[in-house]
Length: 153
Image 1 (spheres, rainbow, N blue to C red):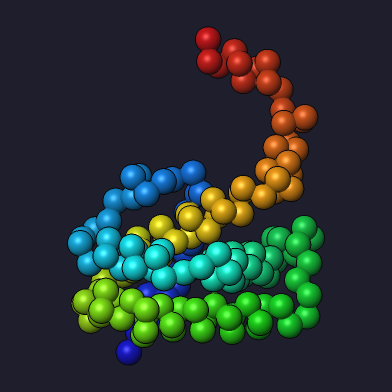
Image 2 (cartoon, one colour; image 1 turned 60 degrees about the vertical axis):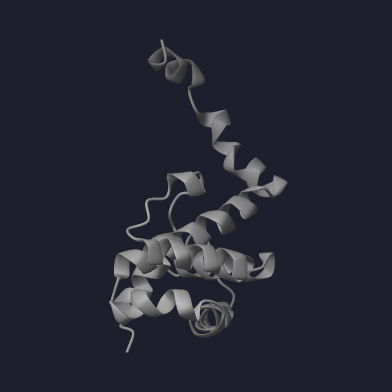
């Protein structure tokens, strides 16, 4: 039986910074790389949106985030349900052959690396939204760019 810790590690991998490209991923073994490739090729933009929404509502449920993020009633359960269905489909149907050696070997690092790559791709897609880009650069108006430039000299 898959332990919750393995699922939690896979989920945590989704939070890896979006800037890391495929060439920056260090897969612990060939099975992990094969699972990553399968997961990426087996998901659609809609699937990756399910993943990002799940991450967002999960982050929003933290006590430290509740003053900044409002989660509508039922949104967390809906996100969990959709993510559970996606995860199940990927591991039992689309990428069963690639997932089996990692699951049988309890290879947490392999699963984490494979899903980390999917998380990076999903985040990169979201970062392409002009509203997200504009929002992410909003802090610049409050940064002391001259002081930062001094560091570069």
